[in-house]
Amino acid sequence: MTESSNFKSGFVSIVGRPNVGKSTLLNRILGQKIAIASNKPQTTRNRILGIHNIPGAQILFIDTPGIHRASGKLNRYMVDQALSACSGVDLILYVIESTDRLGSEDGFILDVLAKGGAPVVLVINKIDLLPKERLLALMDAYSKRFAFREIIPVSGQSGENVDRLVSLIPSYLKVGPQYYPDDMVTDLPERFIVAEMIREQVLKQTRDEIPYRVATLVESFEEKPEKDLVVINAVVIVERDSHKGILVGKKGEKIRSIGKAARVDIERMLGTRVFLELFVKVQKNWTESDRLLREFGYE
Image (cartoon, one colour):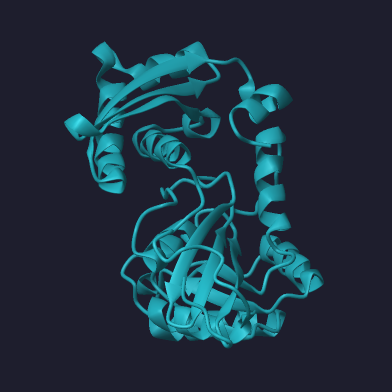
């Protein structure tokens, strides 16, 4: 680790409504995938730490679930995770989508941010979807509602303006230690990321309520270095027998497709060949069970 008397470090929370591209933005900043992303709301369920090293600073990003009107224990858990990440940090990036309009949910979130006291930068994501004149009007509307320190339009997908966003962050950090080694990008265990990559493919390859009632767990993770291979057994948990039938698919085609796509991402992350075996299991009403929520990592 390299430290000097003016080395800076600190925590930066990435918050916003569901499906505005927070995880895509984090992955772009880090230069690799640690947070799953899809076009469905509530893709992110846990707070995720992303470690980004730049000359003279270490930025610790906290990716959070989308803040929404929560109903049900799982949804309340996700919102609690996001709101708790708004306090005790050095900077908050409030991410909106360029096609959004200032609404009541924004008002609720901005009131929470105001009470937290941390400086807030407005990040307008997906700027490629909006003409420049409409973008200026959006910036003006939000600036009248909250005293943002900066307003930065970006595209997490293409990377436009992301370097500019990152370059301004150290000015909000304090002199401090380098908390993690240079080669670390997250403190998450590989098993967690593998389970999330499987769930990402479930999100992408299924419809209706199924994605929101799915959990994924890695039951075994066996490294075989002599064969340049990792053998993974994982289970996809659903709430209903009908959901299991849809996920398995005709002659197992759907679950094989999910496993094949997930394996590509897992191999890229681990840098080795992967044998992935998936099973589907029914746990009735797991999203409302305190015991099962804890067992599946939502506590």
